[in-house]
Figure 1 (cartoon, rainbow, N blue to C red):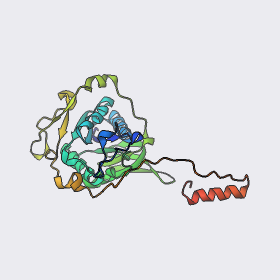
Figure 2 (spheres, rainbow, N blue to C red):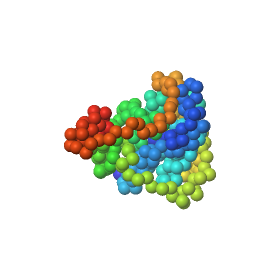
Figure 3 (tube, rainbow, N blue to C red):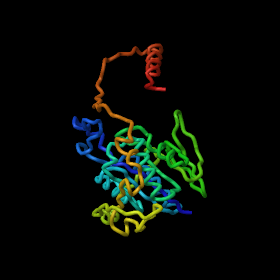
Figure 4 (cartoon, helix red, strand yellow):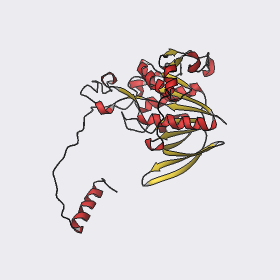
Length: 289
């Protein structure tokens, strides 16, 4: 049957190496001071999209909203098997929170066309909000299945997935179009293909012009043209007032390094009463269920 699949990908700071210069005075992340990686669960999302395409056919388009350096995240998608890649970048997008980001991605996906399936990582490690996926589905006006930990079946017109919930999981069947957010439990991302790395490692991004009614002037895939499409605010017909800081009600006041250290040492008697009391304290603190 073949599906038009879009995967949203984010280049994020490596949160394992947060230093004192991680934040700017205006409360935004100083990405230049941190090493950049592909958001881990976005690779799980890409892997799920590639598995679906390999099973039933279709195309996988990777989309990333970010600075020009985010082209590296898109290259990582091409190395693993994505058919096309689009970089949505504009200085006016800087400082976007989840509300503005989901709006920009919605405009980009509408520019691509009507997708059957949008796949996103469950959450990004730089914010841990898990908001962009659901907000994007709402703005696109399509169904959503969140916290997907496994795909069960893809049939004519529907998809069935297992999603994690508190205390277990549930199985959901949903008609297309649908957005899924994928967790790390869903799969193990495939490594880059050496052949594709050699083919794509030198490609660059190039601004693409759009004709009327959101159609391409040049519809070739990047694998044929040798570049990654680059779109700005006008390309996706986005309202600048809804992008960047002007469209973002969220304000980050500060960022801190949290270092876990050992506190007081308690010795628990080896009795049933003492152990039961300890377990109750852990439940009260929501450390265990």
